[in-house]
Image (cartoon, rainbow, N blue to C red):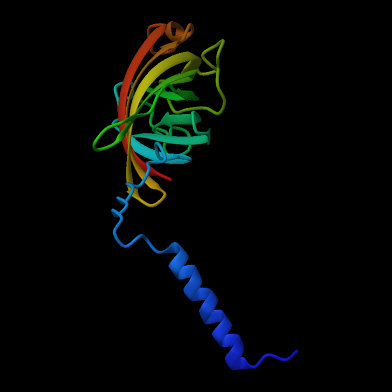
Length: 202
């Protein structure tokens, strides 16, 4: 059976009109309030680069932190002034390397606040840095040593564009460096530090 174009058009219009009537609101019924958009939780920050200052550095250079988060609640991070590849200043510096575990995400009017706990190791160097880490010695020149470190931080995440966040973090840590008193410039075995950094990520 052949159907003319006009007949086919009439059928389509009739079906469309029936669908419109079926989905129309009742003429006298109350209007449904528009639902507010639901929040999806804190921004998912996969990585960020921050710059700031640390109490444990004497070279006057800014503290640089690179953080990568393979999981939403777990990240790996390295912080330091870049001694050994960005510069070779001989002044004392304490670099930090480790993992951070997010303890919570707290929403405020201006940002998401995220307390973290961290564990890793720190390296203290009092001269131009040599490659590698010395956990049980001070190296051939007596200028560097490393040891375990624990820390805690508070991070603020602010969404600045779709998929991008501003990151502000304050961190406190304590490193245990058993060989530090044997450096050419002796330091105590326990090395506290505090730092504040600001940057952006995605």
